[in-house]
Amino acid sequence: MVKRHVLTSLMILLGVLAWTNSYGSNLARADETETAIATDDVDLEAAEKIFKKSCRACHGNKAQGAASYPKLSHLEPDYIAEKLEIYRSGEKIGPNSILMIQPAKKLSDEDIANISVYVATAFD
Amino acid sequence: MACNSSFLTLPAATLLLAGSALAALPAFAQSGMNTTSLMSEVVLDGLDNPWDMAFLDDGTMLFTEKCKGLSVRMPDGTVNALYGVGDTEGYSSNGSDLFCEGQAGMMGVAFDPDFGNNRRIYVYSTSNMSDPHTNRLMRFTLSDDFTSVSDRTDIVDDVPYKMAASNHPFGGPGAHNGGRVRFGPDGALYLTTGDTHNGEVPQSPTMMGSKVIRIDTDGNAHPDNSPPEGFDKRTYTYGHRNVQGIAFHPETGAAITAEHGPWHSDEITILANGGNAGWDPRPNMAGRDDCPDDYCGYSPNQEGGMNRYERAAWMPMTDFDTYPDAMPPIWNNNGWSQGTSSAAFLDGEAWGDWNGAMVVGIMGIGFGGTPIGQRIDVIQFNDDNTDVEDVTEMTLPMEPGRFRSVVMGPDGSLYTAIDEGTIYKLTPGS
Image (cartoon, rainbow over all chains, first blue to last red; front, side, top):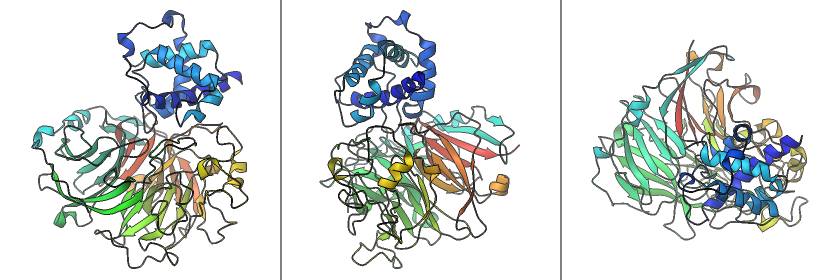
């Protein structure tokens, strides 16, 4: 049950997270920048399962973005993690924040680290 | 009225050979499906949110990309970029007033039924030519060599556009534009529109959102339209939420919409001339109090999950209590809202028992406990063609996606565009 909540949460979180990208500052590509997240420590297999079950439907099979759900794959893991943490704190970033805040509150630091690295690196 | 004359001299140089290259990709066969076997083939890939397609008998295919523009894929697979959104590069000409934002951009497209004689095509797009901005249905003349368009005439220029963000899910600018453009068997041009997250629009007699518009190719109201007194005469039906699907029954000729519900109740509805679809998300009516930014469309509890039937009782997709004569939906997706987008009727003996059945493309959502549900459903009607008799999920021979558009091709195949950037051809066979 806990896992199910986490999966749903991540799906929603990434939806609004992506939206915020269009409002954000210029971002360096993930492959051009070192990240603070220790990529060796994340569980990419677990993240892939989450992505396929809960993220792909909105953001596309390669996180390339679809419809009004923007692209994620070019973002830095640190940026993704930072925004997820902001949503988890309850702070609104844009008009779609209400899709993100409530589920974000259920995420652990490990959940955020896993999915942030996976989305930013799996589709290079 | 608007004309665009900013033609660039990028004739066949803009031809993209993606089509012919992709046609060489292997087709994936799959057997044991519900009624027939289906094969899928990638027609085009790497597109930017393909939204709609239209065909000539020889397979020539117009297609739109939401933020890029209108193109045509020729029978040999070459692609000519015809009319770009804003300053998008690589198009034969551009609409400097066209733009995309959120759900808005370039959407539906259609060939004129008399295209062989008049070369006319029709495209629906968001435009900043007026303020507040609007969605416009444009008519063009397509050149004999299919490399450029000219004579832009905006035959509808007043479909509302959502200018500013609001406190709602998906609350950014550009929400709910409808967008499908189709000719009916009556020869009339139909355009579907949306509510723009504005509670006043659906039941408004004059704001042309939340309507199915029936017009001639100059934009004049069809003489047989019979909306209520005081309504804009272009109105065929009203009180819709966000109609992205419309198709015409092959036997009865009836216009049938497939509509995206709020947090519940996607709907298929057989339209009646002058009918009310019963969507009215205004606050302080029908037992409701205030709602965020005067729009109750996602209430109650718009920020979280909730039983869909409780939602439907509080904010019905079709409000029979307030509008007892509203057009009844014949399908409500078991009470779910999963992003029902477009509709078409299968045509051809190769489809077996599905020949003549309706198909609807469902994009998938997955919020608050709703199953994501990306799929194409096959909707079979009863003998009287007045109700749904059976619904079957099409067993797809490829990975599902956000099925934005389903269009019957002249070759008997079903073409479908997914937001992820691919147009597939689905062909029945063993």
